Image 1 (cartoon, protein in one colour):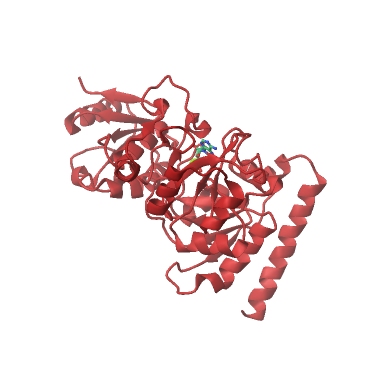
Image 2 (cartoon, rainbow, N blue to C red):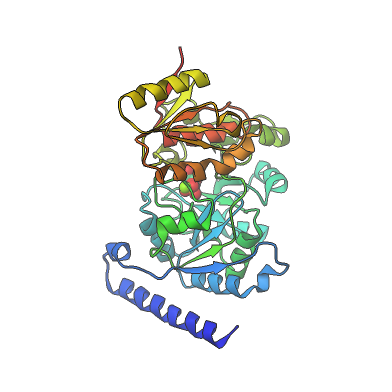
Length: 383
Ligand code: AMP
Ligand code: MG
């Protein structure tokens, strides 16, 4: 490491420390809101051989050990990490994101040994799921160990845990030696971040550091499954599909709130509107011709209209802004690009966005869940 680089890091650490001292002197959490941290960006190539001895990873891990917030890539979306065993560190997540305090966090681990520090009474079905899907986009809800901050679990006696399948996430967690609480690294209500730029757009100056490891892969968050019920229950659809899970452990339940609008979700975070672009979004169930007709009506009233479509149909529409989101014949590509496309509409000054809908099968279930949340459940059906 060059002397210049080292002294730069030192100066920055001093600046961050000064700000932390200010934090300690005041009980007013809003101080964190208004002041500007210097968010350090660490560039890391996820393909290098020995990430565990990578200086940027070690430096970022030291921020976590000091109770600071570090955003990092996972295979789903970028996470905003903090020491899960420290209430003060976890508190910073809620402040930086503006996250409602009753929305619990997922704890990320790098080894199965760490699981036993945070969860207990692990049922055999959970062990089977771990064997098949970890590391990967499947979060298990399990009985919680006392040592986990109740701020992480929003006072619940269960904890949500996953092992991400991303070399940078795993190296960072391992280097910190800590279980890391990490929700998606966006301001609450905004689309989740799939690139470091998305994270900085939302959180620059509000977090200590970000590890930029390039774009994430899956694009939608992990599937959350409650393993404390007699039959395991999917609380949030995500990167691992119901079909994948049922092949391994047989029939599972789905939280009623995912299919019935009136039911109260068992996963507290699922009740919030999420992922919303700035312009109102409406999901259209119907033909391209029907969607085009809706576009024409709005444009005739002087509105600028956006259309969210796929590569196959991008030339079908005539509108002010048409953005393709992956390929309909491979829904995984739609999931990968969904949040980037929702954010891209914010760069255009459209007044309204119409989106095509997608089949409720495989990863399509997660796509439609996120799309309808982004739309505040506004849907139009072709008669
Ligand atoms: P995110 O903010 O994208 O990381 O989302 C985390 C999701 O996990 C939210 O929907 C939470 O409600 C859910 N979650 C976290 N902990 C629990 C838990 N103990 N029980 C049920 N759901 C949980
Ligand atoms: Mg989130």
